[in-house]
Length: 428
Image (cartoon, rainbow, N blue to C red; front, side, top):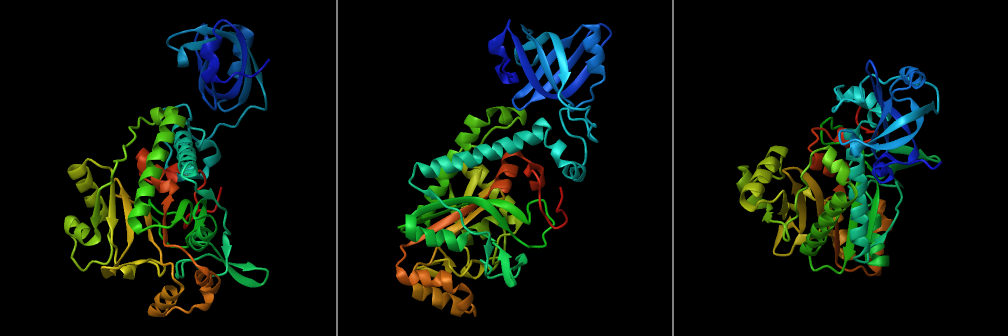
């Protein structure tokens, strides 16, 4: 007999079916017992009246994996409007050791460290699993949107010979007796691949050895990277980012509607044109000194509130960041060279995306490195490619976990990460 998932049971009313899953909860009443079985699509209520079956159910702790054969019977008060009656119940493994928290409760009451210590079972809770479903749907939307625009997915090395961002916060490792590093981003490689395919994207892990112990930082996270050639300036990149976000949210609604409902979310709309302010104007709106070199989290929150109140938008572009705070490969604003053709996208008052136009002339790279006192040799394999003709190009990167955390209203990015890696955590 073919296994039937809980979501498909309403179409099988009156038939005998086989389901299988985890014991989510048992309710043992005087004359009847209710067994709630959980599978990947939801919950099934099993009604037990036979004394022998009841005795077997009583001996099955929560999270034991079971198989149930029974008749699909309509019941408007049961999950999905049906339940299984006249069941037989067979365990598919030994009785489970219950986790240190109740997965059948509407919310996990354990502290976040306890949940992370026991992630393999905590992630079974519908709210934790829902966030991961939303992440998967967002990535599917990211890929689908770019595929329809003739982007090519690439896969670049995660072990590199030099740091990407000219910084010291990298994870060093031994590569057969030579020094190497975990990649901080695919930045160099995705730029080089513009010279091959013109439009590329990548979904992959990046590693930042920054000693941040905050609710918004991870040492390893998933980066959704995009790079495109033949742009006029950073505004072309911003337009692609806008369409990509709209595609991601549309796919979340389509693929993960159940997860959205589980978390009680209302998905944001993406304006046809996301409002944008120059960095200097952003400082004024945020009440920051005009010589401030960057936006602090408090400034971002103020800007998010302003965008919502003024434009009715959960998204806001801040353009023209000072060149001093941008990587060496960033293209300056031709009209204001102290500022960049770069941008950040704020989502509900939190920096979500960094992007912009890149340099594309070999001589400009040599000048940019010299201006920062950086030697060319560590970047030779990257910079040399620009001698062979590269178009004007630009790109952006979205932090997946940060996007999902903001979307679902999680207070900590670790709540939407399956097995987070941070300053303190290497297991499980």
